[in-house]
Image (cartoon, rainbow, N blue to C red; front, side, top):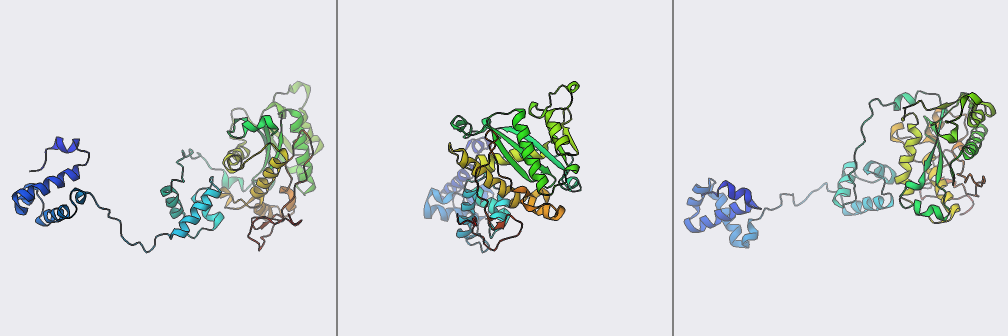
Amino acid sequence: MCPPYYEMIRSQNPSFDLRYRLVQTALQTGIRAAARQFGCSRNTVRKWLRRFQQRGKPGLEERSRAPRRIPHKTPPEVEQKVLEARDALPCFGPRRLKQTFDLPCSTGAVGRILRQAGRSRRRKKPRPPTRSLAAQKMQWRAFGLLQIDVKDLSGLPGYRELIPFGLPRYQFTARVVPEGGLWLAFSAVNDSTYALLFADRLLAHLKACGVRLRQLVVQTDNGSEFGGNWNRKNGRPAFTKLVEDKYRCRQHRFNPPHRSTCNSDVEAVHGLMEPEFYEREHFGGDVRVFLQQAWAYQLWFNYVRPNSGKGHRSPEQLRAERAPWIQSRVFALPPVLLSSLSAPDLPLPRQIRGHDVLGYVSPHQDGWRNPAGG
């Protein structure tokens, strides 16, 4: 007779208990009687009785139903290559790992290998936007919008401990829309003076590279460093005068009230830099080394990194397609420490991961190549 229901639900392994009762009944009353009591075939009774006689109680455990041979299974050397790629760039997911390292397996296989090895992290998926403006932004004028923002780095674990030892606390970030190019600068204090220095240096560089500043709109938030709290009765803020009077830009525009997504492009860069740069690099107390690391990331972001929201194209590729009259060196402005207002002698690598920073793909695929021999 089968065990009562309450015994089965209280058992830690009901299937094992049922098979053990079946085997004991067969040993006592025979195979035919056990099959009649448990409502199964005689072959089923013989199978579990044979396993019990060969291995004892472990023979009644559930066996794996996985195939013994999988012809299309990923080879171990490919799995090792996937894990090495993940260790090199922990912030990359399966799709970006496959694209960056040219892995010889599918994106699903990369994700499965990472999950089985415990290298993947479950992240909360962001809420999908109500209306995606990615396709609409690509219809805008090339180099028509420049978003500028400031990020406080004291909230980043692992970096804030190094600020008392000389590393800058604030990051001045500018991003052009819709191409997505990035420019960086750093300072120890966030005030209007450093905002003016950053904008003056950047706009002068854009003008020298052929950007049509009369068609450029500079957009900022309402922070005091950009003149957001300026008393409008006393005239325009100094930042607005710099943008509109000195460089004759089309407009300096503040974010409208209660529109937190207006500066979403430059804010997205801050979210990308945390896992790709600040969590990935190891910083010391030397500001020069830190600027070199930021310089390398900026070059990689502008010339190499594909953007999935822009057709898997880099800002340099979009510049070549949409604004070929602008020089390629427009994205090669080194980061500077605004308090010193002097960019260190940072070497400009001729190739970065096989891509020439001047716009063509190099046949060398072995990483950095410095024309000076460094």
